[in-house]
Length: 551
Image: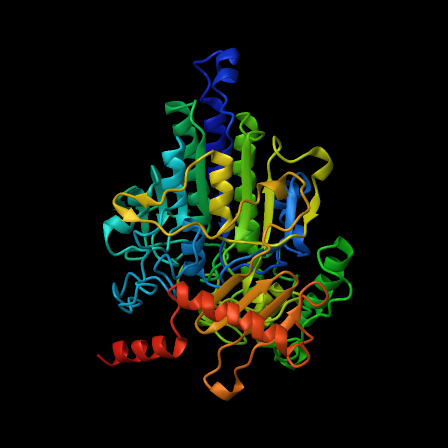
């Protein structure tokens, strides 16, 4: 539907290159030594959905970036859209940035403000953003896509947090075809109306990203740039053009169980996972227990989801093509990640009326827990939870000038997590991370630079523990061990689980009963971290939520 418009925009960019008024010698002298940085993030996508991580979805552009770059097998997010964005953007744990639970939605400006420092529902001023830090180092800073870090006051918007240019949605989700206020489109500091009958948000985010780069290189060709491209795909609602859905309409006729087995086998063959890690249990009914009509509906839900991922990949291809044609690709670091594990919201068989599928209508249209279980192959749990299925992200790094030829296509098996990206970008951009910014004291960075891993060093980045908490789900990783607990309203059912991730990343063999000393050691680390990083007991947050709802 919209691909022709993308190609037209790229063709226009190529026809009027930003270097047209400079000689090749001047262009070479203007080439910055510091790399451009492009951070691309998908939304609610499973660990094994894309081809280079074992998926069946057609993603040739991401696959090519992976084959010419490196893939991380153990990169961790924060299990939910807005806490991930808070941690990613600030280099902090989400509670330190003020988003210990969720961001205040546009429909309720105080909905997730619990009057606690770590739970204000908006990114606070005791943090600095990637854009603020890189802008201070001389980068032009641009963003397109999903913000989800504060939207109800203008001083919370991207241009007020360090970005020079912005186009996208401020809230957490929108209709892909017809985004409307209050979940509509913002350009700079202005809300705009969309009247294009062929509009599709994934295309528009890419179109504007390319336009922003074109403008920036025309205005200030000597400056490096930072682009944060935050797709809302494949987050619900399930919406994609018919011709892209048609590619997958019959692909999922054998159901989620078969898909999980196919992926599991392929991931072992590719070397993404260890053959000794068992496949986690199927978390749904059997496919053949469904009626013919229900099977057709569930096939369609999955096909639309696959089309959303496919379209995102197509758009990444347009962006990379632009960079190549304008001789920007070699000196640009491209990093691709996802914000959390696959989304099981909507129940086992998905949410929203089937009658709205393949229409311009609908908002909460999801594919459900059964398909999310397949998207997260081989792991268990989902978005919200801190087991591997909730926090494991694909991570592709492409950097021709920085990744040695002999390392291209390899896996990085050391682990990292979101706060590392601030430290990494400070390293790449030769920037300074401040202790004070605009009169506010700034929390220290919580991560470490991953640049040595990009350059082939095979040594752990983290020898200290790293931590998680979301909605009472919690974990700590220390070396090969991970201690994790899932929240349960029945307090007596809550217990720490201990796993040796090197031998058992699918978390099938709980060692807690046989290694009580390790449980005590690591749970003590978690408690100490929580008490010093603004984490509140989830029981307390639930009481506050209940009081807010009763008012």
